[in-house]
Length: 188
Image (cartoon, rainbow, N blue to C red):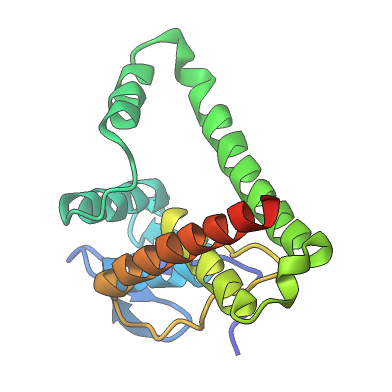
């Protein structure tokens, strides 16, 4: 059984093939993205030199998703990132991004907790399904960061499902509109 508290070690061979040391098989970038979405830390090293290649491969995964139309990063953000590499802001940007994602995770978690604990709507039919969809949406928007507590995402099947994410997003938007309409009626 694999120790999931340690990073999953992936070795890159001279042939540029990636080897999963836990399962003793070759993996693709999609496989690595799946491990990360499942909450696993990954470390990719060059077999010969021992150099840590993780950052390069993670950037490659992001670039592939962006090029397939699965854009998460707005053009203005990408432009600002490029600018940050040439200015004095370079040292501030990584810390800012890390804090921003932590705030996003924390805020999402608190929102779900508050909705469950203090909201009378939590007794409404379909509320649990909405929480699950919110968790799935959060997971899709954050590239698979761990879902917030209080509402777990549906289990991963290991299959790529970009259409499913779009459908889930549409469902979330519809449910949000319905909830806003219900709140508006309650306030009258």
